Image (cartoon, rainbow, N blue to C red; front, side, top):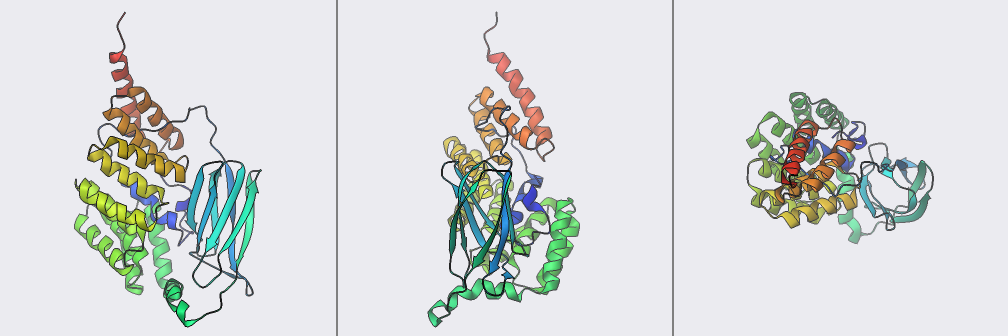
Length: 346
């Protein structure tokens, strides 16, 4: 599921740390579902993009947190700006959106904008706050970001490019170099963990995720989502649930966290909760393909084959060549046969 946010040039965008989780997605025998919208529905194509700058010196601000939401459209997106201070959110319907920007050392900014065309571009300026000793702790993240050497950033970016090409071994090499250049680079450690999962190095992945969690003091949710995914892969859904919920306490708006939690709950046969987790993911990111897979599995276990088929078709429409597309086609055929067998014979 290499979506637009996985482009390697978006070095520090939060969404980019996560979609790689599903490149090696292991599906259950039923394959997931969805609260499927009709295959005839046209997907929204609107886009909101822009740049966040420091007021006064026009310096671009990277890894700044933004939220974009619309109550009337039921949309909530949470993203970070990339290395050049740029952000971009696609797949939005026409609506009024509330955009909020927060960054340590700056006054928060909130604005309301209307998307009534194909795209909306914004320039958002943050005003530096006047420093006081009481605010010293708020500068930790910004100072850390400034300390990341260029070499570490470059190696991290090359590692992401390798992951985008399914070159896990190459990505391990680059992420390892990034960590050597900056030992506190917990983002690189988290992605190293995912690359190791792809290579079957579960123990190495465990160490990488744990190191990322320790270095970030539990404040970097993607590392906890990755660790939870590892535990799910190892057949430990109860342990996975615990760490995934801790990650969602840090970032409850991350759709991938809700989807992996749904996978763990499904393995625990807690179908209603698994379905709710998938729906939470779709509220935060409408059209999130993997959420439909979880819902398809829920309906398969309920033997609700019609809903299972609809959700599989929703996934295939969103990801026709996705990592689970072949299995989704197979599951759809099985569900069609099962549904036919349950119909009364004339």
